[in-house]
Amino acid sequence: MKSKIFIYLFVFTALILVFQLVNSSKVVNYQVEIIKEKIARIDTLKQQLDQSEQAYAEDVYFSLDRNEEAMAYFEDLYIDDLISRIKDKVYDSNAVKGSNPLVPFSGSEAKFLINKVKVLNHKWLIADFSDGTYWGELWIQYAVEGGNIRLEVKDYLLYPTN
Image (cartoon, rainbow, N blue to C red; front, side, top):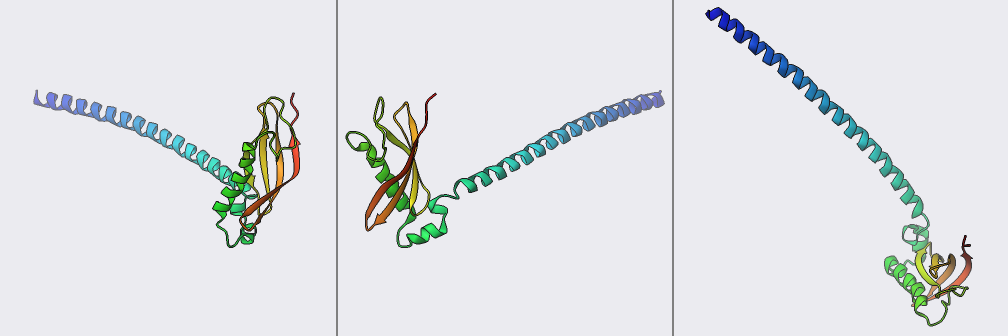
């Protein structure tokens, strides 16, 4: 009788061990699949990050604060403060009574306002303008003479409406 109990106990223990082995291998395989998915996701995110960094580098190529030669032109001025002052000068044209002096068009429903400005280098900037219906862009040459900033519109573009 004792030997039968030991045999049953041995068989029961063997069944539990087999169950644990099968269950553990399924859990391990599941975890391996999750890890593979995470690694693939990380690789995708790394590629997207590389693409974003490359696109950013291309976007800031024409930017005063990234252009060493243009910054050297203003060697005695703090560039971030200068960029801010230039942008403020352009945005101040929005506050002028009547039509905007920088935009060579009169707005159909409202006056044209400058929405966005990008300082390209030590001489030029581009600006986006709109009156709510029509929009366009300006190419402006600027000069910093003493403490004053002089703006001169070189070219402009008004996008056609459909």
